[in-house]
Length: 162
Figure 1: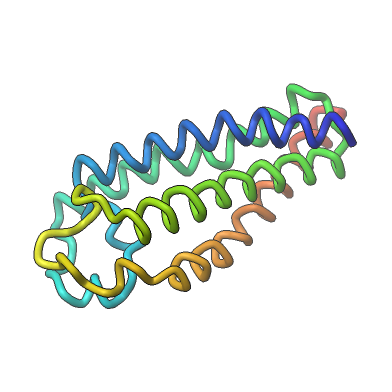
Figure 2: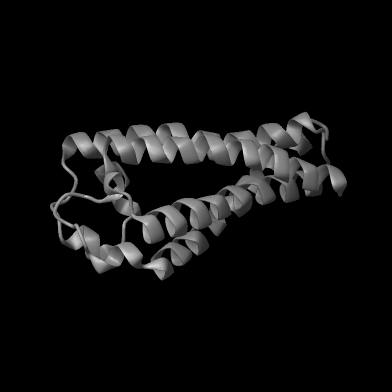
């Protein structure tokens, strides 16, 4: 069990830093690329994403999703865990990442500080930027991805003979 907890902390911490920096870079470059993560009240105040923005958002998903799912699986294979342990590790890493995103990026940065680079032009001062509940619900919606990642890690270790 100590291996799993240590793995969650180290692999999850490293991956949380990478994904957090990726998210911040995306929002810094073009906050509308993350429009689907913004509260509905903000999305209603602006025009929908154009073709370029949708293409960029898709490209960012092609980078972040394989990281978020693949690294926990690689961690489980690297640590040579049994399937149940691999599930717990990968699920734990995914939850760790999601908690960092929720607490540090969503609640602290987005809701509390609300730096100008996160504010979409035309929505300045919108009360939805302080909607902590929206982000908590988003965290809960991410739980199936953590379960899916855990199941993939368990399957990968079973196939590899772990």
